[in-house]
Length: 189
Image (cartoon, rainbow, N blue to C red; front, top):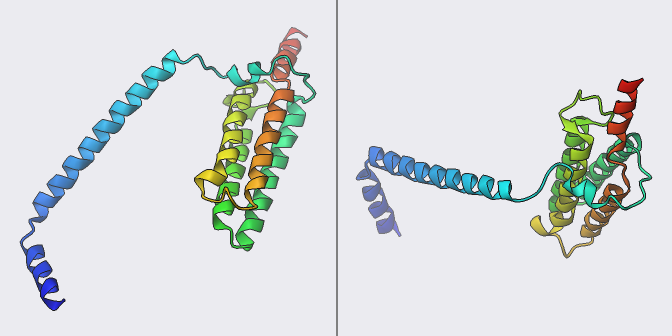
């Protein structure tokens, strides 16, 4: 064992730090180039994919619309609280992976909500209709959380699957065009 350690020390003495740094830099440049190419390819494919901010909300246009933008905003507060409470409970019970997934979902809902223009005034960067599409992303994140964080076969996963299904029902029942119409009526008055 001691002989192997001495061989390693001798090899380490012969390493040229400049050569190592150059190799690491070269690898970094190749990785960056590959990522840039992949990003360009993804952007090119996305341009051909017919998706816009209204794709998801408009997919449910035939459903009864019982949820106004104001009610939807309060539901977003409730969902944020739901995931914060779940994360806290899971963390105190030692379910770190489930807690992480819950806190990620809470952050997503809170972040998008804080930036959403629920009133249709144009004062915030995310339109209410785009919010509907982002809600679908959040539902997918909730549904995939147990799989991605490795607790799909545990009891905690049911909370995520249930919330994902609930989110789809909320997306289908929200009147995504209402705040736009309210703003048009305010301007006309």
